[in-house]
Image (tube, rainbow, N blue to C red):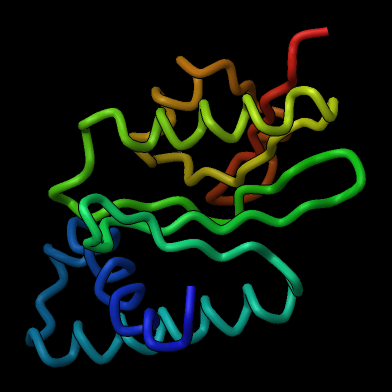
Length: 150
């Protein structure tokens, strides 16, 4: 990811919040301004709390379709963010990205963790791939974990 990718990641972020904001009776310009502010705050948070994270843009055929941010710790890899454009969702791309991650880090014996909103439809994907809830007392999020086979 490069600084010029922030325009794409802002639009991607907005797409992940569209359903949530749909019933709110704000004008489109107000929603857009809110989403830009929220994306900037999220980006700043990630930069502050996950220094050195591996921020990657997911591409298909040379076109950006998502993002994957990873942060390595001594015993785990934290998925800071994984998201795909609406057109790329539901096609197995997220599962393929995660399986590739598992294959890469399993020989190193590291776990994979991710915070997932309690109402995120991707929870079924994470469960299907072998993630389990490690901590469900984190407000709107649960901490999920995948462990390599012994």
